[in-house]
Image (cartoon, rainbow, N blue to C red; front, side):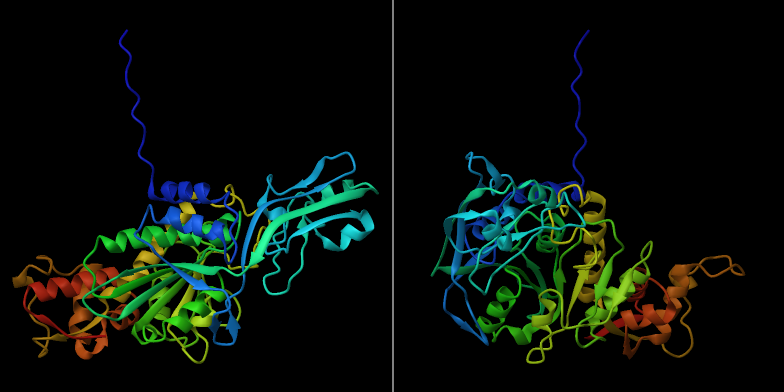
Length: 436
């Protein structure tokens, strides 16, 4: 019998994104340091990311670029020399940005430096100490309860010294200098949804956009949360006026319904585009008004900038039990959710790219569409959706209504309205005017 070669099924885009998350998951990231750089260098294998290094001590508005943190090892050993808490088993075990420590402590002395989740005794919490020098360990509550009244050797083999803050940037020039900003924070250690999912979707969007003709220019930022967006805004003030629309991406891999948080403006084109895409998609969704809490949208939307930047997630930060814990793992994010998030983001970008105003070249009553092959030959039935879209585009194309205006007024998906406009242009009854 002749052996038959087995043909493997090609991976889907969602599976590709999940594979990238799995590859980046073990890296210990923080707002500065080699783990952050290692992550961005891996992303450079996917897109031509430019890395920028900003020295510690650089003033950025009311903030200062912090010292750089790097960690090699950390543990708590009992008197028998056993590692009862081991950074090498999970990088969440150390409070991120802990100062170096080598001490021997009693359990009573050690306990104030330990953090657990009693309601979820098998999960390790994620905690940070970015701007106040301290140290600590995170462990499961079961581990904590198992600690004996003993003397413990505590070691955090880390450095906190002058260095740099790193961020990655990928700019794509379009026909217009007006930019769409896509921003993702990359500063968490092994957290798959809050951090890595946004990065994976941003990478896939950048790959797609790079292959397309573009009316708009694009800027993809991979930054440490809060201090990264503040630093970029402080150092790129001449670029800020070119940002017309933006999305902050995170928490895009969980099984929750998609959620869009509006920009501070509330009625910006990106806000309307996101609402349109979600309302014409499958299943439930959530629209949230802006609040000055969350991810980096609160920096882009600060009153001194007031950029049209919204936030796209599935379950928002802090609203799922697994948030900032070891339960936010590779099993928590799914290829299907990643692919769905990507597809919805792509539709938002499509509206931002193609929304424009047009003028009806035959505004005196309806032009005869049948002789142009745009209308069905047999009348009397219910008007098909595309033909109704043609009539809506013709009726509202008076230089004052954009395609998104028409789509919202008609209750028809933007894709159908856009296709109708393109067909009318091709048949000489519609012409573009200034972009919306």
